[in-house]
Length: 115
Length: 114
Image (cartoon, rainbow over all chains, first blue to last red; front, side):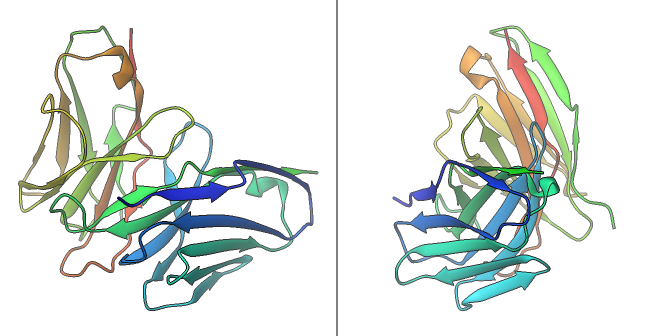
């Protein structure tokens, strides 16, 4: 059974710091891995999608890496800003239950960036 | 290009009642999935619809059911509501034909069962 773990559960940093969020998964047979941002009480905003054959993806100040063999992904946020405060979720796509691939999520890392 | 839209945004129901949540998929997306997110938890896969048929199901009882319509929009129905059904319900759509696509999520429906 695929399990996704995110560490730390919460993180508080001063504005301007570079930071790394971690995600680990137990089954390396995934199709892809997706990082999402969730603001309180809101839906999910996709940040980065990494295919299983890729090592990393970049978008602006965000960089996500994937090491499928070790079951790990990291999300690197450069020069953090108060507007980055949110919960960050990682999810792996796996074919369970006969679907065309469904997402298995971690519980998220709640990030707070202090001005 | 419109994204995924869900309605209603908030809903309060009494235990034992039935509820229907609605989702319009992103333009060009023909696969719709539903997820339940309890407070402080990651979303849990409920089921997926493709070509108007259920195409995969997570660990949810049969009182959770759904529909997909020819325009790819979808409904989630929950019968005999329980207090533990209180959660944020998220709809996600994706194109099909390959497993490599990511998902686009809606803003969710907050369901409170009292």
